[in-house]
Length: 526
Image (cartoon, rainbow, N blue to C red; front, top):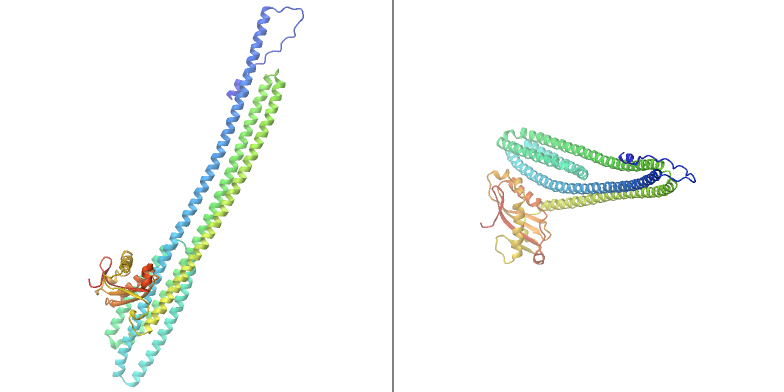
């Protein structure tokens, strides 16, 4: 508005037509000179106004270009931040998946060892019951002996049927768990860990209760039949509770998976809406910028028209100049608008391509993670099957020393050995056992009165376990089972160095296990 006020001036009156043969008076000459000076002053003012308008236009163009550059840089920063956030999220999910896999492997090993221990206790109890029944048969009549034999066979048949049902149920639950694990996310890790802890506590409580009832049953031989019936009912109730807990855990996992899917869909939808909102905001900013430039151009034309009305004598020249300047300005603005439109289209196309590449990368990463997870599960299942087969063969075969194998064996029962590589490997194996968190598996059992067990562990050249031999048992089955679970939970161990592989196929390491506030492996003889 200040520029408009400066542009206002009074148009001088048109000069009077000269009259011939009249000598101008000195006063007329002075007025003519003054009018000519005023005319020149007005012309300079008009030229300065044009220069100022051009300067304002150039400044507006510079500011518009600066704003466009700032918008582009902000979009690039936002895109970079989003890509970084996606990468960090992918790394967090991968770490959570690895933690979940490790915890699940530990839980499976603990469950498998606990099942083996329960089976061993059941067989021992069955053996003791058979011995007691044999004593009773010798004291009773032949008819009572026949009845007891029939009951024993029926019990064996029912036990076999229950074992087969438990195996089928375990296979079905394992298949359901593997399928649910493929879809679970990081949030399921805490729930699975809590479920595993509760399951372990419940099984331990059931085991203690079963031992207490078994001791009471052995103390009162005259109530043997009633206690056997109660034990069968209790086993059926425990089995029913286990199945119900497994079903509830599967339902919770499925609910968690659905919740994760819904959250993922909501996140994708929010990202899509945010991208659409940003694109609309950018388009709106571009439209407002174009409208502002157009308003500035119209205002400049209005001021130019006012100046044209004041400068009638230079109308023809200034009109031609203004027309040419307006044409050039229009062409420049049209070129700038087309260039800005092309840049915006290129930016949007680049953003779409980047989003497509990021989506493809996420899909590839997810497929690769699923493949690695499936491979790990298959390898774990194969290893568990091989270990089960070896245990079954070991149970069926007569006891024999691991030294009977034809493989080349290295033995380290103390600290001294001519082979320094063998000593270093045994020390590394001991550190892995003592420095990891395996003490939690044996903490409660170690509170019982026991003897420090002496254990020989045979390790193959690939780091897998060949056998675990108790040279001296702790006297507490729970501690011996916990030691087996700890050794298996730290697999695989380091493979042999080339120097060891050339000499040995298997290394036997014998240590005495001591428990106080942690696991301590003591050299034999100390």
